[in-house]
Amino acid sequence: MNLILRGLPIGIVVTTLAAAQAKLPSPVKAQTNFEGIDLGSISALGPKVHIHLASKDCKGQPDDVFSKTNGVYYACLDGKLVCSQEKDVTIPSGLIAEFDATLAEHRARMDAYKQRSVREGRSSGDPEVDRQNSLTRHEAVVTEGRKARADGRRPNLVSSRNSSSKVAPSTIPDPYISVAAAPEQPARKVADELLKDVTIGTGRDDVIRKLGEPYSKITGDFERYTYLLVSGSAAKLDIEGGLVRQVRIVPGQ
Image (tube, rainbow, N blue to C red):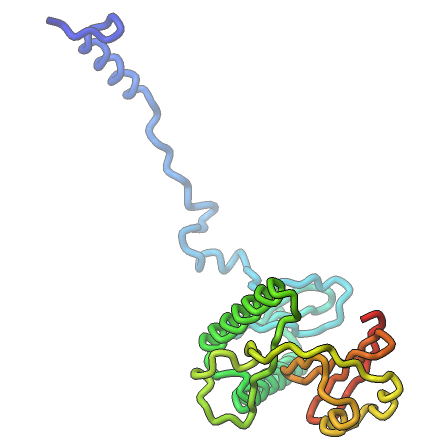
């Protein structure tokens, strides 16, 4: 018995397909060599192509070194983007020295800030631990905010940071903000005329003595005290280093 496929014997079908396949062109191999340059090796591009790893529009810009990547300096010279690896290009040593000095100063400030943050308990010194602490703080604030809305009250957030604490930062789940369980107190308002005794340079203790405890307090790199005023406005005091650095009146609160 012959096997029929759409009216054709199977042997004829196989023979026809084989013949058609034989007539197809063989796959074309991708060309990797153009004018003697082997694109499979980036080193081969060196003599003909120079790749900048930093970018800037230097048109109309003064001569300046603006970046350093993998030991290569990038600069604007005569309105063009250049780097220290280009042939026939010399970046003035003064520009390089100025960039290196600025970079070193920036790194020193960042290191000092990190060390101060660790001393004051605002950082563990470990970025991963700090990230986890930040997530914990965020979750605590969100949870308290939801509870406060459900209870029809203000979120009860207080600072828990203690710069003199000897507890290892990794054991403090929330070094910036913790949720307090204290009962809600009615909002206290301060007479507007009392603010005349609080100026730039007033000490933190004098502020508390003259105005009382603030309506809200934010603690970070500096402290911000908010007082509600009888007039309906709010006074925001920025305190840094124990002294008032700025006093702002925000109307309509």
